[in-house]
Amino acid sequence: MNKEWIYALPKVELHCHLDGSLSTETVRELAKMSGIIVPERDEDLKHLLQVEDDCKSLGEYLEKFALPLACLQTEEALEYAAYSLIKDAAKENVIYMEVRFAPLSCMGKGLTVKQVTKSVIDGLNRGYKDFGVKSGVLVCGMRHTRVERNIAMLHAMKDFLGKGICGVDIAGNEADFPPMLQKEFFEEARKLGLPITIHAGECQCANNVHDSILLGAKRVGHGIAIMNNPEILCEVKENGIGIEMCPSSNLQTKAVEDMKHYPIQKFIGEGLCVTLNTDNRMVTGTILSKEYELMVKHFGLSSKDLIQITQNAVNCAFTDEKSKEGLHKIIECYH
Ligand SMILES: [Zn+2]
Image (cartoon, rainbow, N blue to C red; front, side, top):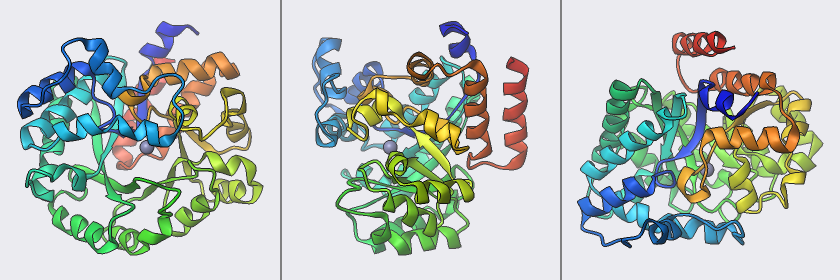
């Protein structure tokens, strides 16, 4: 197995943030649309959007979202951003992708929840037409926001549930705002029939993973903290919870100390439903193929392992059975 094999492998990505995954080229275009001045040199622009290798904390990581978010405040920009992300993912043979974003962060210039959501879905649909990548939107409520506001957001996008929107999550500061604070938000999502994934266990707190399962999550974002908690790890396994692992990002935000301690082999060995993802293609400076390569390099994962990881992602994707069958067929044909 070589680099070309990994790039050509049809891949599935379940954890990718729209605002953190826009290329310098896309951000330049978006900035132009919004009248925002950005540095002329790509290198300088990149510095505003991407963390350095020696990123010190999650706080430093989050600073890199300021510029893309400032650009994502019009319908035109949101549509173009979603379209461009699909275009970029298609270049490395991603065949299905769940794109997440927080509508409440894109309303600074007066757009409604409905306008914001429709624009992103339109961009993804245009991406599908041009590049054949299927996708869905994971809508993120905000952790630090009053739960009523997150619930109202869900109601405002009722027209798109199951028609573009494939599930929900919450974004923001996990350490200070654990998932239980948004209990009613997740209850409402369940009532509306929306599958749930929750960012949990990124900040050393395994209990947030346990709580996420209680809240109805079928997948967790990161989940790293369960590596030191056999009981919760067992609970994750017994409930067939998908783990959205994002190695480079986890290293940068200090969810793990170093790559040596990254628990992917442990999780695979324990029989967990492991998937690989980028988290934020631009902020982290990665693409999905790079994350696969990294795991081969550090842990000797085989082509069989990588195919299994891709099949896991299909199995726990928030899409219908017929679409899953289609994705499985494409992957089967490759090997
Ligand atoms: Zn994330």
